[in-house]
Length: 259
Ligand SMILES: NC(=O)CCC(=O)C(=O)O
Image (cartoon, rainbow, N blue to C red):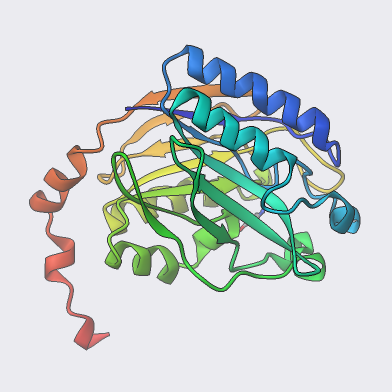
């Protein structure tokens, strides 16, 4: 199963330009045989938070129309990355999972908003998890800062999640954390982790790139560069996860009554 990680730069506040770029990268991934596509966090707008109420789109807005049409036309699965979502007079940082018929299978709004990047001033937090079924097995999604909150992916693992998608805008100043946390989440939860970060800079941050595909043993199957836009196409054998769980039966050995 080939998975395309769209490691892109983002034009701050220019939704139309970002959509054109994403369309070109989706087309490249398709030409290279990908059947699953993953985009980064807040890729339509970047962190243009002071104007986010004007830039946000409803769940059936033009960006989702483009992504659902792409999935339907080509019979592929898309993890939308996150999009500033306008809902009930608020704005959420929301990621959608889209099936090969173009239908939205699941939706997740970022639970942990990062004060360091002022998300808590401008965005509203979500309050529910997303574990769902894709063609290759049960999957889930979290967004960027959520990576630091161990309990969220652990709870999702206990609910059956075997592949975790992590769209991100993670700054280079905390690059070591990005790598360590993605690999740790994969090892401790015996999950595949597919984490897509942006490159480039905005007014406040230089971003780290290094998009990652990690297997449940913690092996890095593919990693993006630090500065370059690229479509990483990774051939993944999702069946190997169960063999790793048999070899190292961490979930069977848990003793939650002690902690
Ligand atoms: N966009 C984010 O959530 C950034 C998270 C981050 O920089 C960190 O956790 O560190």
